[in-house]
Image (cartoon, rainbow, N blue to C red):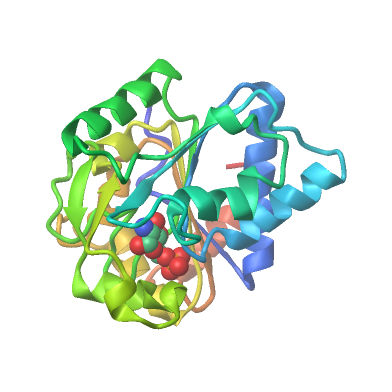
Length: 268
Ligand code: GLP
């Protein structure tokens, strides 16, 4: 695929709901063109407005996921699969269980597998068998991680087990009633190479806490120390940010103007 522009496309909007509508538009266009599309789904709080918008459009009869397939990015290791914060349950609660996905078409890494290496390979194989991910939703960690590819992850990595950093565990403790000890130490995560194989990457980030990661992602040097910077090498990557997350971008005006003047406005 030809790379479309010099780097990722940055879209800056006032609030998360506007960003969510743009992402839902992109997913809607994909499903209209390809009802059996493969969606990559992220957990974390950033994509929640997107999922809420998708549920709203589904309930309004504007969208159907009945022929679509989904793969989540990652899963905690060492957490009971029935735990409400296991990502397979989070994604069901926030999206897939609220729309018409076939439950068998929603896949997550097997965090409780005895043979982790085999589970990782099986996940890679399942994505390949499904024809690859058409559109991957992403959030970003405050330290620039995507999925659970923590700083210093191999930029070519595939699905594997990763140890979470203290920073990520502290960030995620809010999902475990603030109890840091309850946050698992490991995860199975799609690798950066796995994520880069998706045909379209759509990352959403809101709030000042993400400004440094977004600055690096868009304008920094590509570096394993800020894993999301690998997206600069993707042929079709879109970064949706609110004003706060865009706060450290030196070329924010340029990105705004570029999007405003785009002939097929709002299409990305
Ligand atoms: C976790 C997830 C990531 C997510 C990140 C940011 O670490 N594994 O996929 O992007 O959190 O989460 P939030 O959007 O809640 O800030």
